[in-house]
Length: 242
Image (tube, rainbow, N blue to C red; front, side, top):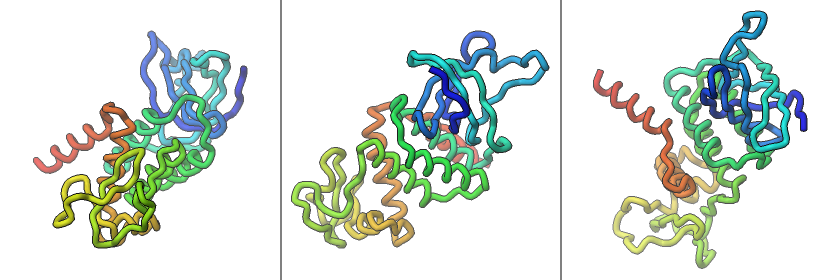
């Protein structure tokens, strides 16, 4: 099978043998695809390096019938962008998250569009936490893990703004036993209702969305650690020590 000029992004790469790369691509019409990029670590006959840049949309061509394809071409659709500071750590996180959770050749065209738009904003040096939370929620939804935040999971009754709830993956929201104060892993009904309606900026909903999504994502990662999170923690520690 041969695929020509498929739009996509580089999610992950690692050196392979002396001159090649193993690359995981996120593509519009074929989902996540793993390829060996033979000779991409050495100049071609004209002395030009064949490079693939993260966060930059390409047209990829590959061939092969097995799980591991052979990448034959990677043409950048736009000039490569080199992210800095917060944008860089956000880009590293999103790419690692997609790499870890997406199944190979599982097609999600709407998710691809959302990823594409998010990268465009990120490359414009405009980190936006609300957009990041929305992309995380879209990813979970497309994978079949969508959050139901407008009612209790067992009874289906609407949330009560001044009550606290816990979110149990694969069950949904349950009213917390302890209603006197917020405890780790419990969230106010008001915040959850704001998140469900897309109002991340209301009150403490933005912090609640971050905590809730991290907990759910950790569950579906199944104990696998995200290296991008550790890099960001180290960055924050170095900044605080300056």
